[in-house]
Length: 425
Image (cartoon, rainbow, N blue to C red; front, side):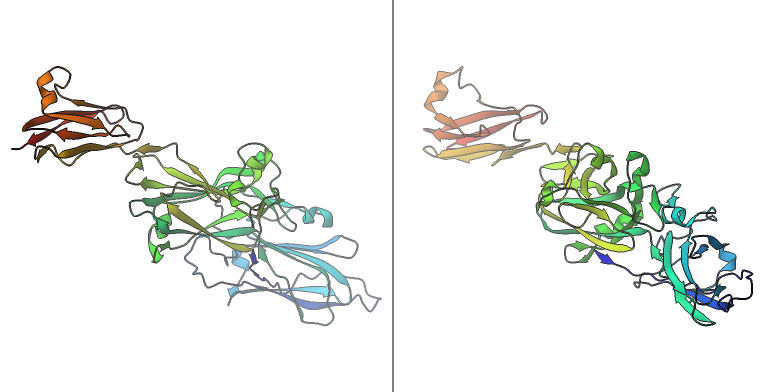
């Protein structure tokens, strides 16, 4: 996966009194500049990846003691040209560990150096991004060498972004699939701000997470290039589950039960499906599910990354590749077509073929030449052979007259019809 650098550089911390005596006990001004990288996406998108609504700042000395803690709300921040600048004073020549996080919505509690490293930020709901994506950064062992020096602390987003497209080039011409929603399943409900993070149990995930539907998914139904849709983006906190399967086959990348089925994140695409053979009913959906991660056996979702997922649908769109297809809500399209027609003509001595196209294929089906069993004189007009599939028959004609055949399809088609063949009209 490509790591997207996002840098927030924080200038200037608070002044703290110090004792005189040691030449090193001299405080000088320091500047931390928070730089927000952009990949060209517009600010109108939700969430705004560069939005900074608040900042927590914690500075620890060499003894691991918290020397300074500050919470800055949006009214106290100025974002200019993708930068936030703050000022502070530090002892020169002394190493400090500096921790910064943004968009938590509250002041972090007073924490020890060890506690802040393992601090976990909890989301109230899956798309809690109105104040911006939670970000964090740290700078260990920073030494201020001279007054006014700047320190850069890259702030990285604690969430990964999934850019999703649909490739319909390989679909059969009679197949259509229109996306109605995209859902993140098993997205973590919390994330470690300053350390690697993953969900440990079902209690640490949102079973139904970030959701896009309605107009939000329309780019997936409109071609950006021939057969390939536009892109929508979904977000979820880091979830480093690691390499869980020893396989090179994407078709095996799935969990149906057990712990991993509860904590590994996956996407669920729902939509309306139609083909000449099957379709979804009103209010029901065809569902594609696929697990996230880098490769067939990996289930990592990394923070501050952008992962592109292209769902390539082939043939009837129902085969399983790196995804599972839930077909429970598909119904077979009932079909009952008589060929060549209800009224037909031929000459004596001809072999004439009558048949019905019927679906589903396992529909009960009966063919009965009318009066064949009751009137021996009919046998002088023709004989017949039933087709191997049981859906048609060939009439072998001998002399002028008429042939009447009854075709009957059982459930779920429940239709019947008569076909007439006039010999030597």
